[in-house]
Amino acid sequence: MKNLKFPTITILLFSSLLLYACDSFLETGPPKDQVSAENAFQDPKSAEATILGLYSNMNSFNNQFNSGLLAILMASTADDYYSAFTSYDEYKLNNITSNSSYLDRLWIQPYGFIGHANKIIEGIEKSSLPEKVKKQISGEARFARSFQYFYLVNLFNKIPLVKTTDVDEANSIGQSTMEDIYRFLVEDLNQAEADLEEQYQGSERVRPNKGTASSLLARVYLYKGDWENAEIHSTKVIEDSRYKLLDNLNDVFLKTSQEAIWQIQTVNKSTAGVNTWEGFTFVPANPTARGYYNVFESTMDSFEQQDKRKQDWLKPYTIASGTYYLPYKYKVRTNIGNPVTEYNMVLRLAEQYLIRAEARLKLNKKALALSDINIIRKRAGLQPLVEPLSDEQVALAIEKEKHLELLGEWGHRWFDLNRTKRAVTVLSQTKGNFTQDDTRIPIPQSILLSNPQLKQNDEN
Image (cartoon, rainbow, N blue to C red; front, side, top):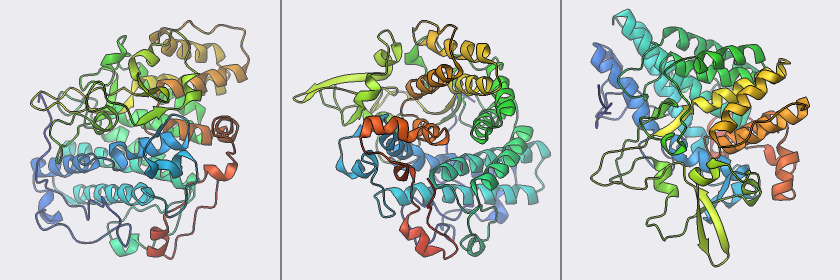
């Protein structure tokens, strides 16, 4: 299959796209043009449409949770880049309240996708489809569910763990601890890893395979502090010959990238010629136009002189107040009438090397950790780090390489600084009066009003 096409009217069974705020975080009633659960799993083709519909809804519209919004907000709360638009100032200035703009989307939309995945899992288990089909579809749904939960728990700490398709029950579930959520993620992702096929479904990497589940598992184990399993699962992916670090940085974010472990194909319903919503958002409308997303000055100062990532993944522009750099990993704004060349990169191989480097350092394998760091540095055109280095120096080197390598991607910097308890130390240097209280992302007030079982996130 040369190109995976998502259907215009998808055969779905989820409750709501939840692209905008609603009275409860899971709503009832499928849209009228959608097929009921009873008919969704009668044959492999209709079952496949349910999972394709989930991916389609995750990336159909601009500035939603999985289509640029999470990246923009978390890049601003950290020190990746910030927006010139005042609607994002609360995130840039770390003055986020339970009524801040966009915050409800960070809660509502992931739970909508989780509800969709839950219905697929339940429906596929009750079906009489061939076992191979059931495993693949169920594995993809479990992966997608885990993916959303990973971000929810790292944003809000204590969240409801919803596994039911009963909406009334779901809307009355209390909060689980981060430990409980991670325990669930390990279980669900291990099941997905076991069920998914080794090969991708089709010639592109837009439907998860076994390596996709292994990649997210490696990250989850790292966040849990299970260094041994983080090393094991990242090594699985690194040693898979399908994945390759590309020498040319300008090829990394193409839809044909061999570095891709999982990509999302944009379903363009509103603006002709979009390749990725990131490209549409960040790339100026014409070559001489100014940008509206600027990399923090402190981050620009972190790049070594010969770093190719500064040259290829950032773009300078000059206005009266000075020269600034905008994110330029995605280089296509619109491409009307021409083939799509870029897909949204969700999981890629470079992260696995950095996961393994950190895990190996924690396992007292400093030389091997340095080897992994230097693979990433070499690709960036930098000289290798050499002994003698203390464990603390190597840890800071991993932190720096992860920051610059994954700059602006999926909130990595914000989550890493918080899980390693480095946020205050690092961000107070960039943002001035940054305190531990500023690391807390509150649960939206509208959500608290919808479910009396929920309490505000008071952890940081």
